[in-house]
Amino acid sequence: MEQNNSLFHGTGWSFPPDFSQGTGVGLVHGESDINESLEILLSTQPGERVMNADFGCDLTPLLYEPLTLTLQTMIKEIIEVAVLYHEPRIEVLDVTFEEVDEENGLILIDIEYKIRTTNSRYNLVYPFYKDEGAN
Image (cartoon, rainbow, N blue to C red):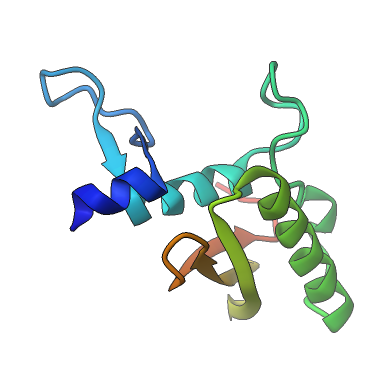
């Protein structure tokens, strides 16, 4: 089943790259490839990739802001636009937030999505730290 899904969903390098197999770089298939692609998209700042300068999801201007409804709407819009332009295999259904560690500024961003080719629903929980790390 995984092999058939990889035809629709794709196959890519694991992230971070894993060379311990002895057969070259480790690969991920299907839903794992999509999840890793989303994590890379959310953690990349626009301009970081030399040959694809618009790739990424810029959440840094939102650091140190209180988690208000306005901020949640802005984050949701930024994520939906980034996925629309850079991850055509999926459609974002909903983006929700949970502030789990207010002292350290940790927000869990839950992205519910549908894979377009199979109409399968999945979700990704992405940790976003809105405060600067210390120590």
